[in-house]
Image (cartoon, rainbow, N blue to C red; front, side, top):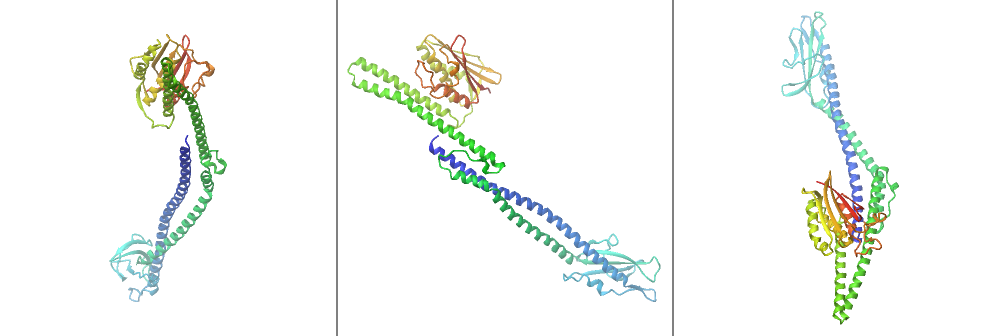
Amino acid sequence: MRNDEVRQNNGRLRRAIAGLTTSLRAQLFAWVVLTLIGAICINLYLSFRSADATSNLVTDHTLLASARVIAEAVHVDANGTVQVDIPPAALEMFDTGYGDRVYYQVVTAWGNLVAGYPDLPQPKGQQMGEDTAFRADQVRVMMLNHPIVGLNDDSTISVTVAVTHNSQHAMRSRLWLSDFTKQLVLVLLAGLVTIIGLQRGLTPVLRLRDAVRERGRQRLDPLEPEMVQSELRPLVHALNDHMERVQNQMAAQRRFVSNAAHQLRTPLALISTQASVAARENDNARRDEALVALRSSTRQVTRLASQLLTLSRAEPGSRRPRSDKIDLVTTARQVLETLAEEALRRNIDLGLEAEDAPVHVEGDGTMLREMLVNLVDNALRYTPANGRVTVGVRRDESDAVLWVEDNGPGIPEAERGQVFERFYRIIGTEPEGSGLGLAIVREVVDGACGTVTLGDAAGGGLLVTVRLPAV
């Protein structure tokens, strides 16, 4: 990985952690405050109901007390007439400074109006407060039946008292406002405590952010998980895993560049030498020989550069993923047609074994074709003259199976795990090559979520089997 990519990666890590701490604080605070506000709204609603019930209860007690004072002032005169002098105290007990109007009515058991308003509405039950409308006012009304001294034992009078809602509403508002003030103070205190708690609780996260920010561009050593709370330690482990992968990629890239430079240095030196020899040589035969060698070295460098480019494109993240629907049978037939001339030149029997039905896979069509080209090209390079190379394609349940079989020298079992490494070549092999063919195959197969295995071909040689998910 190049230095600018490392810097960009570290910058993304720093910005991600910084954004995490800010949003985490804001989200936690918001959830706490929203929870408190929701609880307070419910509590304020219940407080309103309680304040309303309390104000109704106080008003009803006052109405009942006023009705009793009026009832006790009722008397029978010498002529047997029911009389009443309304005591001022019965009405003054509603004088709370809110301008309430008081209405009353005294009626005998036989329906005669003794005093008060004849059209005052009657509540449904005795000694039960009830809200109703009277003239232009909304009032709270209560009725009391009271026995009269001097009349028959079963003779009673009915006293009804009503009062407007001014003082009742004022009492309810005071009670509710008192609760609201207390709840608001509690919210402010809870918010303050929440901010302090979040600040202290997020200190390890801020410490993690600072630790990442203070690192140099090349520092990718792991962070200490103990620096944060247990819930955030998976994040630190994930960061450490990510930095370890970056380190591995950087090391692999350095090895790749070093090996590529080493591989290019030899053919380039040969090209320079051969060009110098051709330039100095006066003998046409020797000059032609030098030019043929120069052309061969140039082809070798061109192939190596082409394979390096292919390997770079096959690496994860090097290009936008593609999901082409590829028919392996058609692709194999096209590749064999391309390499048929080389097979004929070396008198190698190059064949295809496949059914008529297509075998489809999903992936990058260009890279899958490059994979097959490298497999067949490797087989042709290591197969002796008059040999054979067979490419096969079949569908096996949910997999598409592609195999390339030759009757060359094969690969010793002890080295089959190493031949997929870049620039690895088996000691003693005669055909010239870059050691990148199977490395390209492995990268392409891994990118297509498949597997590649090496085995022995029937009758000797190498059998390469690739399995890819079929569609």
